[in-house]
Length: 389
Image (cartoon, rainbow, N blue to C red; front, side, top):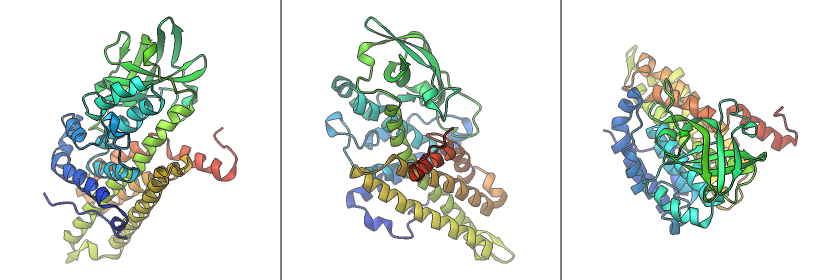
């Protein structure tokens, strides 16, 4: 297979450190070697390539920004972003797995957990020997997580959970779930272990998107959770929303990988596809599409790098992350659709990655906050007026 050399029209690489480049290249090579050759088959069959989890762990991908004392790589957010970018160049499902494991499971344990919980679980999650999922979204409460009806009731020595979560990445294969529920009207976080009585996680089937990813329901019927499994420092809806910020950050980077995959495919195809005696890349309408694609990739790369610098400096605002997630997801989907147009009928074949990326991006644009919700988040920030209801 031809080696992927990247898309970098503005020499953004010159702004990266040697370590950041090395980390990106190691994951880029992993994607080329381990993901690209198998992913179309996995997507076709609707199967997550679970055997890659251990290999990702060996690369230090899980929780890579967290402290080394918990078995994590303790790298910066630029490196983390580049890793998400390369994984999603392979497939959104693999990046989703890593995003959930890192940003939605390890992060809340690190941020809101006790030292005992951190010391016990973070090394296992980093090693990939324990898989986690994040239970916030409910069947009737997606964009309005504050309306959740999953409840916790205090008992001697612990809590009883009742409720249902939906659209949960990794749910069926997860060993632990970070579950958010209302305790006396206040949102709290709980660590729920697989196999506990009353807890089931059936996989959701029939997806046309993210087919190489596990998506599940989480069902809690009088599930007893010991006191030691409460996240002691989490309180209120702000806590899970802080976790979502971590995931949105990874998505903003990840979809640039998808952009690069579809653009690179379209460019190579256009240069080799002959119509009316010359390559279609030589026609104005095709060049217009390719230039649009390259321009938006470049803008997204620069947006992400500055966002990462702000995040590493502790200065990034959640509204800035919303802007990057909103912009990059929409443009990634536009680019995938343009790439399909350039490939013509060939664009629907899984000989090429374009249609798979396009279908995946329909989900990626929706989860962790829809385009519309991020619009309103930014709108409130710049006007001072909330338009959510």
